[in-house]
Length: 289
Image 1 (cartoon, rainbow, N blue to C red):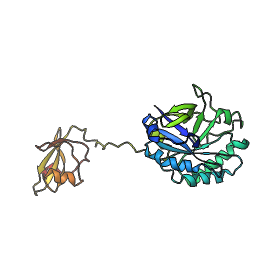
Image 2: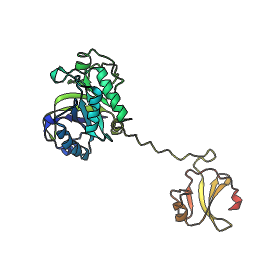
Image 3: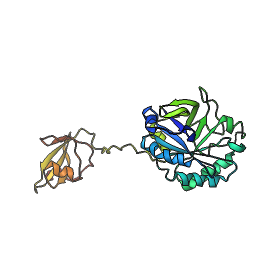
């Protein structure tokens, strides 16, 4: 499965995020900060609310600079965004104005600070072969975070920095997207929506665990609602060899025992029979029923 989404900054101006969502995209990254001071944080603040409300998985990114302390930059990014719950987070590592060329160590320091302050939330590393390999010499980087790989071509090409796969692929800077005026960057994520949301720090909902089937019962037994000698109700387990156990109840009224939380029976018929679902073996002699 391939999920698509744009990334944008103040250069894109006013964006209709609902139209972006309606065009079939699943997520979007927007620029929040750069260095330790960024004059367009208002643009981020104006867009993050509508982006979240659109139903797209929202993402915020920081443009890393080499002429500023990376730890302080991480603090600035975190303080500006505030709450990263259900949000993607990324750091952009490439050449910037005034010949800024952040190193792998600076990116790592940024990521480490982010992890300290936003534990359990991965920081995604945006870069390209043109920068990581060709500009800063291909240092190790896969330990920093998942790769958001930039390559404007028909295929992603060779990787670098020790990454053996990319998580996002920015495949064009001249894409077209409803809701965004002019050209914009477009990206691909190879995975499901649940896998995408794991990158936001969300713990996936575990699959339901089926009720255990006791070794003695194979699911073919029947249940019968009966009366106990003391006036209570009972569920009698009927196997191939006859009654094999029972569960005492306070009433013969099916609604009473179903609502009690003691047992749950699906499909109990009006004559009191149902397929056995998953109950523990009961050692009380059936003669008591």
